Structure formats: C-alpha cells, structure tokens
Amino acid sequence: MNTVISYLFGGDNLYLQGGGNGGGNGGGVKKSQKEEIATKIKNITEEDAIRDYEKLKHADLNKITNETRTGNKFVDHFTFLERLETVSKKGMSYFEFIKDTEYHKKRYIQNLLNYQKGEDKHVALYRVFKLHCGSIGLFKPLTAMELYNKFKPNTVLDFTMGWGGRLVGACVLDIPKYIGIDSNKQLKEPYNKMVKLLKNQGTKTKIKLMFKDALKVDYSKLDYDCVLTSPPYYNLEVYTGTKSKN
Image (cartoon, rainbow, N blue to C red; front, side):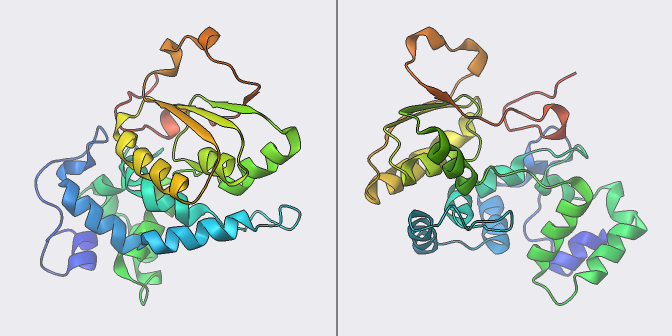
C-alpha cells in the first residue's frame, strides 16, 4: 500500500476503491465516499454557512484585506466537493492524488506529510495537494461585492460562474438580477441548493442560471449592464465535463 493511503487510513483503505487515474473522473471513488472525504476536510454545516452569510451582509468593504475569508464558507458548503473533482495543473484532481501514483514516492511529498503531523490527516493531505498540485481558485464573494459596490450594476452577467462567489456577492447586496452560465452540469444540484438557501435568507436578487456552453448562448437575447466572470484557466484547471485545451 502506498504511503499516502497508509497515512490517511492506516492499513484499511476504506474510501478509495476501483478506478485508476486521469480524466477528472475522481479516480474511481464513489460519490458517497467523495462526500465523506470532502466533509472531513471542510466540515461546514448549513448553520455554519448561514452564520457566514450573515457576517458577509455586515462586512465593511473598506476594511477587508486579501486575507479576509468571510463568505468563503458559504460557497464551500455547496461547491467544495466539485472543486476537489477539478484537475489541477499537475494533471490530477484531489481524489486522483490520494490514489496510488508515482508522486507519493517523491521524497518532498513524504517530507510535506511529515511536516503536517499532528494535524487532521485529511486536512494535512489537502494542504499537501495544494502545495504540490496547486490550489483550485475560488473567486471570493467579498471581491465581487467590492466590484459591485464600485460599478452599481442592475444586472450582472457571469458566463463562467464557477463555484458561486459572484452569485453570493450579488445576493448579499441585492443586485436586482444575476445571470449565471456554466458548462459544468455537475454544478446544477449544488447551485439549486445554494439558490434555495439564498432566497430563504431574504435576498431580493432575481437569479437566472443556465448550465450550458457559454459559446453557444445567444447574448443578444439577454439584458445586462455588467459582465463579471472568471474564465477557465486552460490546462491549469480542468473542470468536470470539460476537456483540456490543446
């Protein structure tokens, strides 16, 4: 058994069954197993997400810094699992990383693991993944709020809406309308849950979501006065249901 699996699970490989590496398919890990792993890394309950959203509503945009993370928990509550599915610049997702690969034999990977001793094992390995394979970026709701506050839009068009940060920022400020587009259909379920909770929290923002290729949308039929998005990072990040760019 490889050292990383032993580090995580001792001699019992409970979570990772079947499948090989590559292609962003999660290395053969079952959905229920992925959900359990994601929860062990970031255990964010709905109550935690709501508290984070309330803090976001009262955030002073004049006092935030690059280190301010308010609002990120709300986003991660819904879409963190899909971020773990995303293939990083090293050509593997987090779930593929914790399978048996040649990377685990490298001395610096072992040194990183040893350095993390004392931390929760899942949290520690996720840190190693981010250091070695690169972090999958999250557009922070606070960043979106800063931009909305500056330009005062009525309708935001976000044609690669990603993990939800720009939607959340719009809803906090009650931007009249948000139009989001993304080709990753795996995001449809978490987004539906996110929108439901946002509405329960009283947002006045009208939300229109489309899960399709942004290049196939007829934008002449959409009415908007602001475009804010975060385009795909070519081969640096490959999302579920998409192909790497040549």
